Structures are given as C-alpha cells and as structure tokens.
Amino acid sequence: MRENVTRFVWGFVLALVCLVPQGVFASIDTIAVDVGISVFKTTPIGIVPFEEKPGIDWIEEKPHQILTRDANLSGRFDVVASDKFNLALFSRSKAKHYMTGKVEPTSDGRLAVDCYLYVSQSKDLLLGERYTVPQKELRRAMHAFFDKVIYQLWGERGVASTRIAYVSKIDGIKQVVVSDYDGFHRSQITRDSTISMMPVWTRGNKGLVYVNFKTNRPRLYTKNFGRPEKPLFEQFDQTYSPAVNPVSGELLFSSSKDGKTDLYIGNMETGKARKFAYLKSNQTSPAWSPYATEVLFTSDRGGGPQIFVMGKDGSDLRRVTFMGRYNERASWSPEGDRIAYTSMDNGKMNIYTCALDGSDIVQLTNNAGNNEHPTWSPDGKLIAFTSNRSGTYQIYIMRKDGSNVTRITQAGENTAPTWSWFYDENKPQPKEGSK
Amino acid sequence: MKNIVKIALISSAACLALVACAKKQQPETNPTAEAAPAAEAVQSAEPAMTQAQADSLAAEQARLDAERLEAERARLEALINQIMSEDVYFDFDRSELTEKAKELLAQVGELLLKEQRFTITIEGHTDARGTEDYNFTLGAKRAMKVKEFLAAYGIENSRMESVSYGKEAPKAQGETEEAYSQNRRANFRVNIKQ
Figure 1 (tube, each protein chain N blue to C red):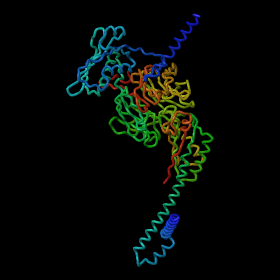
Figure 2 (figure 1 turned 90 degrees about the vertical axis):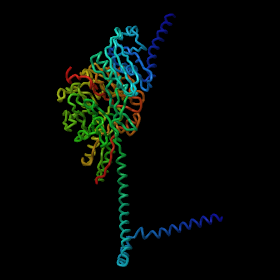
Figure 3 (figure 1 turned 120 degrees about the vertical axis):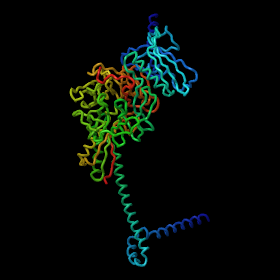
Figure 4 (figure 1 turned 180 degrees about the vertical axis):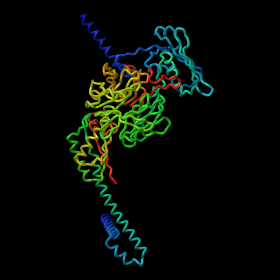
C-alpha cells in the first residue's frame, strides 16, 4: 500500500515537471525553444539604474532598461539587476563588473548621460562615456556605450549598434525597411507599388541591394541611403538572390533564363558580370565565406534543393547537406566554422546549423510554426530569422545555439531579415583578412 | 374601367411615338444607298449641305468600323480571357506537366496557332512552402516546361516569354493543401502584336 502511494506521488511530480514549462512558455511572447544544446558561457554583469536629476519627462525606456535589453540580447551576459550598488549580491552572483551612470536634463531640452563600467570589488572605473543627445537618440547612445563595454571586456566588436534590413508588408505591398538590431528606429527604404524583397547590405553599410518587380520580373536594384535607386545588371533576364562579397564588394547573384538558373558575379559600379560556375543543375542562394574564399549555394542536382560549397574560382565542389530532402539558403557564420540553413520537413520549415562537412547537425527551432531565413549577427553570436509562430510572420533573434528567442518586430508581416556589417566608424578596424 | 381605357390610350400613343421616331431616324442610320446620288444632284446649289452629308457619311463609316472592331475586340477578349483562365497545375516541388496540364496546353496552343497576333507571357508560380530563392528557380522551371510544350506544338519562341514569380503572387490564400495546389501553377498574360 505504501509503495503504491509513493509511486503515485512520484508519478504526480513527474507529470508536474513535464507540464509546467509548456504552460509557462505558451503564454509569453519570448519563447525559449532550446532544442540545441546550450553552448553559451554567459558572464554575469550587474546593472544599476542611473542616478536621475529631476525634470526629465520620460517617453523612452530609461538608460538601464536599454542596457539590460542589450545585455540580454547580446548572448554574452547574464544580467544581475539591483536597485543600487550591492557588493554582496554582485559577489554572490559572480558579477565582476557592473554598469550604471547619471542622467540630467540640459538647458536646451536634451539629456546629458554619463555611463560607467565599474569593477564590482574595487569600484575601479574601467570605462566612462558622456553622451548629450535628444531623448529620441538615447537608445542609440546606450547601444554605442554597450558596444564599448563589450570591447573593453572582451576585446571584440559588439552588435548593439548594428542594424537589420528586412521586408515588411506596408498597405499590402512588400517593402524593404531598415531598423536598429533591436527593432527600434525603423525606416522605410522602398516606396514602390510593386513588390520589393531580398535586401542585403553593401559594404560599409552604405546601402542595400534588393529585388523589385517593377518591370514585371524579378530584377536587382541598389540604393545608397539617401540616394536614388539604380537598376543592376540589366543585361540579364531575371535576377535575384544577391550576396555581397565581404572583401571586394562584388555581387554574386542568380539569374533565370529559359528555365535555367545560374550564378553570376558582377561589379555593381561598371555593370559588368560573368557566369560564376558552369554547372548542369540550377543554382541559387549564394553565400560568401567570411573572407570570401569560398561560396555556399543551393543546387537541385539531386531533385530537391541541397546545399553545396565550392571555391571562389569554382573549384573543389562538394555537397554539404545529406539529411532530409529540402535544405536551402545557407548562411556562413562570421566565425567561419558553421553554416545556418533552412530545412523543410512535412511542409514545416526549421532552422539548423551544421559544420562545413555536414556533420554535427543541430536543430535550432522546433514545433513553433515556420522558421526560416537565418542571418548571422556580424559577431557570430546571434541569428535573426523570421517565424510565423505567433500567427503572422515576425522577426526574431536567438543565440546561435537556439536559446533565448526574442521577438523584435510587433505588427504587420515581417520577413527576410539580413543583418548589417559592423558599424564602428570610431574604432580602428582590424584589417580584412587578418585573423 | 375609365382607368384601363386611359392606360390603353397612353400606351398606344407611346407606341406611335416610338414608331415615328424610328421612321425618322431610318434615313440617317442607313443612308449609304440614297445619300450619294442626292449629293451629286444638289452639289452646285448647296455645297454646305454636301459637306454635311459627306461628314455624316464618314462618321457613319467610322462608326461601322468601330462596331466591327468592337466585335473583333470582344471576340479576341473572349479568347484572351479563355487563355488567361487556363492555369496549368503542378505537383509539389515538381515541374513536370501532368496529363491534364497537357490537354489544357493543347487547347491554348490551338488558339495561339489561330491567332497569330497573340504573344504570351508565361508566369511560373509556386506554393507558399519553401524559401523565396528556391521558389524563384522552381517557378522558372515550371514556366519553361510550359514554353517547351507550346514550342513543340508549333508556337514560335519569339511569341513566348517566360517569367518566374516564385511564391510572391499566390492565387489562393491560406495554408491548406487546397490553397497550395491552386498556387502551384503556370498562367498566361496575353498581348496583341501591333
């Protein structure tokens, strides 16, 4: 009898353990999928609200709230929040550093923000920055400070001041838009009555290349921000799938002519282009390796789409994906060791990563609508993608292991995100190609 | 009783009026036979009149031409609508033509052989599943299969253009197999060569 009761109790506990997390995750917008194994080692960091002088009429989030969101999104930190400096809490949580600051209104209605990064134990100041900005620029100022913190602590460039280009349905028509990486400061780039799609960034984040249908067929256009649009490679019939060479700035793209789709490479300034590879199969979705020595692409030579890789001179062609019948749109991680791609199974699209030889496959999304179009953050820590898990297509950011999924667009229908390159005019750039 | 008589009177009067109007209009509506000799007879006396008659003649001719063109246009439009409504459907991730598709295309081919002025744009489409990029290549393959079939039927390649819309222009909305099967298609746009 006693044994039975014990068994019953254990069964009950087990059932609870199984049920509770699902209930919790189903009701909130930020869903942790955690299909892959978490490979992140995050560093605890303390965040203390900024000291405020009276007279500020807050319409934006406050500085420590913006920093907290940046830290949570970054994939590098665990936030230890505290109302005030609390050494006991910071030590216990192993937060070796903390961020705080001061904010006061200026006479001309702007905000003067002092931002500090301290060592918890000694209260030594590691980094101090002052920004004097209108309140609507506060978010970007905090992003800039956050990236300085990452540079200070990790010796790497952060992505808080990067942007994302994507496609948004505006009055029923797909248009290209750009926003900050966290979904704020959105601005519309195309204003056509025909579909615009597939935006990618030109080097130096000077502008975009995208596809528009104004000639009743897909055609590539480029537009530097604030400048007029220019059609590209008009000598080709239907052009799409643009990929900017990160070293030379040349454009690799697909062109379909008489039912055959091939890859071409061209110079956007001169308009000259040539065939990239002479293959019998159709090829699309090209993607460059971080130093532009190799190219990933999709070929239908096996019937359905599979991912292949070859040298930039067309040499050394080999197949990467073998699992499943539909693997498409690969994107090379900036660290160079893995690729992210979309795979379809039973009509559902999900995002995977794998090593360059096709081994070590990790499924990042599962059982949450369609998930597609992965794009790496320039530091390789994060992946942005589009998903209709909430009913409509929206843009999400997750860590490269699939954890910490955060939605960054709220309304309408948003697809096809592409992450910008680094924005770091103020920092000496490491030379391209050097490790 | 009085009322009925009144109505009868009114309606008969209306009938008379209509007949009268019709009679009056008749010479104007069909003047080709009489107008010409009459014009000769009064030529010197009343040139202004002749001018007016010639004008009305020309206008009449133009009207007839327009009517004939209109009829021709309506016929062509019916044909064009028929061609444009002939969507060819495909299986998932496939570009091979089904038997039913070939039957439909044979009809379209027949029409195109008869109407040599028609040129067509073949649009290839896919359903909403899969990536934008790959669906462009798939739509291009589908449009090409249709073009090849029509070429084999005897339509010159110069009269046909193929373009892929990928999954960007669905015919049916929704995530059901029914909507998907409606969207896996090739359809036609017709232009008339001048």
